[in-house]
Amino acid sequence: MPKVVFMPHHDICPEGAIVEGNKGETVCEAALRSGLRIEHACEMSCACTTCHVHVREGYDTLSEPDELEDDYLDKAWGVDPDSRLSCQVVIEDEDLVIEIPRYTINMVSERH
Image 1 (cartoon, rainbow, N blue to C red):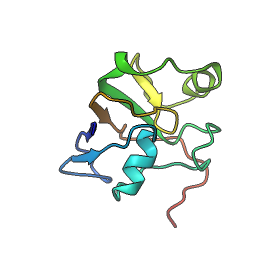
Image 2: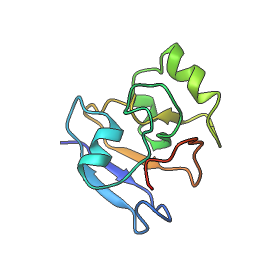
Image 3: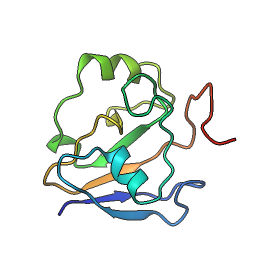
């Protein structure tokens, strides 16, 4: 079973986390299932940028982002060449190392 390693994030997982990924689920789904409260304002429908992550290891094993994801990534904060929307990154057979950016653009926070 592939592992998804989340690098330390000041709010979501200060010590980092290692999550068992299920083949076919997204990185966002794996994080939420494991109690990591990653932002996902559009309920994982690829309609915002709140679940933006950096795939620090394993990026080359993923399918390419489609045009819609690329369009949203253009609007995300702190994008770099290994940026993806975690709701669109489908876990396959390889381990991934994920960095959750410090900031996200979220007009309506899910946390009140």
